[in-house]
Length: 166
Image 1: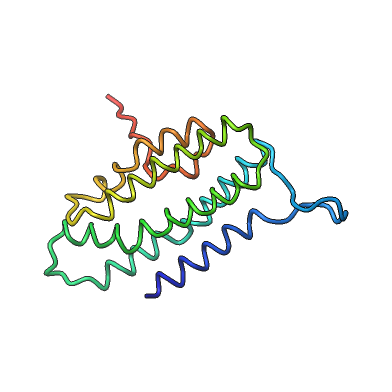
Image 2 (image 1 turned 135 degrees about the vertical axis):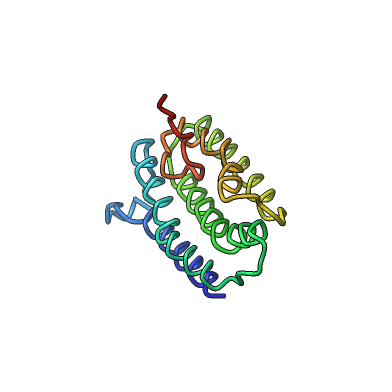
């Protein structure tokens, strides 16, 4: 249950990180974000949502039974440690999109990227066994590529394919 508290705290931090910066005039009800500010704040929110993930994963794995098959351990790690911050990330991005003054086409593209990522989360959440952690991260290859094209490199939840030197 500890991860629930961490997820909630990270979610609040993601939303809080996107707030502020407006002027104090009574005519300014909310501040809107242009694309550059949006990309900066979105990347920061995504980094914040995943901060400490290695420590959380290590702590989770140290509490797992050595008798548990590795494929099940990988799935449990995905379900309880890796997927919740991605869901928090989506919520933070949705909030930033609402506060932005991105052109409708750009906001629409981002919503579609988030839909792709939600689908990837659904697949991960219903998979009972993963042969490796690489297989978990590979689930997010499509949304990761789309995030990178949009400039949201910190929101890509799949590592770039490794460069192989020959």
